[in-house]
Length: 387
Image 1: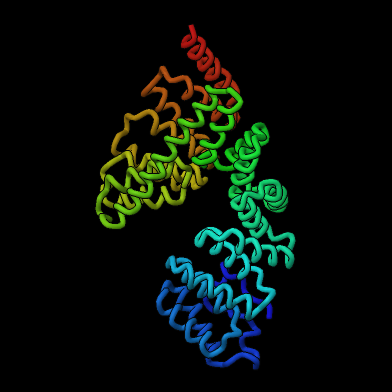
Image 2: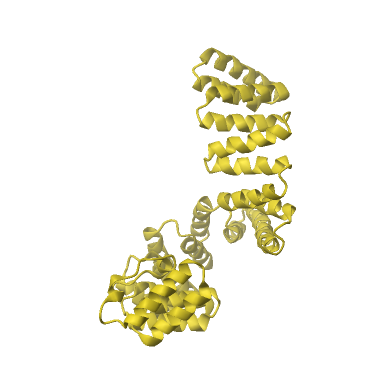
């Protein structure tokens, strides 16, 4: 049988494995498995669980059913039941690499058994040497078992397969720290932070490495960044719980949205700020923040709509005009962009960046003489500010 990958099986609504309908499977078990997937796709967790449990009772050879059940148990923090389900999936299909991976994850992360996890993950790697997630997990298992050199080799291999893996890179950096290979650790954490600048623990580990080589100023900056990000993470967790219990608290939605903007969680920020605006449509700060979120997602028409609403309420705020003009510029509506930049300058003639932006708009519109004159005014203002 060619099994579904467990993580994708959770999202399947109508498609089932062709082999499930094969005669060697119990027909009622196959039907229950399909019903379980449908229920899961509709968010009916308990209904899915019941159907899948009945399916494996009728036919224990349904590896996919065991695996999906394992994910359900894992999500419910029933770790021992999850481990047993994934184990049964590997028995039903000895080549089911996703089940081996999930079993290894439960054993390592949730049950704290790196030795047993290692054995399971080694089997998976033997089946598919290019399975990056399994190699990452195996490297972590080696590291937790104090097999640092082997862990480094495994994690380096995992990163060749998937250079974007934050987990592999973070653990590799800590393995280098354990070996007192300070520069290798620094290089690894710096690369991780290029991918994810909000990885708090990486900032802490990087600060530790810098401190060990005597670069105390850089170390302090990273350790301070770790503290800020940790506080933000706590605030995010608290606010998410709070708005679930108090969905009509507008201020909480706004604060949540602002932190999500800082974290560049654009989709989540958009959702939070939309909730805020729905509760308090008269507050311009919601439209301003949501306009910024849309701009970052390149949703320029929505950006225009948000800043237009902000300007309707506060027409004399120059920064709103500048932001609206930027969205028009991205939409190649140059005349509208120029008009808004001109208004921003009229409202705040001492702001150099408005002139720079207007110069760019003129240039894109083909008005090169106006662009040059405006740029000269920008240079005059910037030189004046440095005197």
